[in-house]
Image (cartoon, helix red, strand yellow):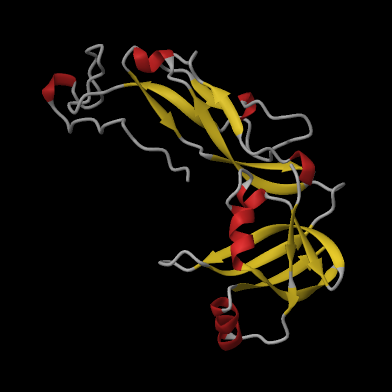
Length: 217
């Protein structure tokens, strides 16, 4: 992962008025902190910041800031954007060291069509992002997983994801990332004709549909 360099300017005024004037001038108010140093208020060019954060690495892009003549390696965190216009309102830059692991969230991409889906099943992805820990230069863009071999009732667990060398995750290895389930009809019957709960003797409420969406981002 290559670094992106951003120029910065010191920011001596705080508050909504000065910050608004900076944004009108095409700059984003920001602060730099971390690694035991005092926080430094700066501003960065809005266009260059947007370019840096819209690349393949997204918010995990390594950004080198020129702060008072010092080159500071950072990650952008606490990125605030206007709710309707989408423009950057404020960004926190966290100082990092190339030799110290940091925490990051990366997307989990499932590739291909599972065999179980071709056989009539339903793919449910329950986790869309994974928290990982790695040295800055080892942060992957994403985790890619081939799901073409999955059959009905198969699951992908966190422990089965292919993490690159030098990358770990604090997530529970038994947490379900995705699964292929048997489709169920509105009456709660599987496509194989088996009835769901509450159907014995024709009484009871219909079973809820199992086409639940995942709660990932």
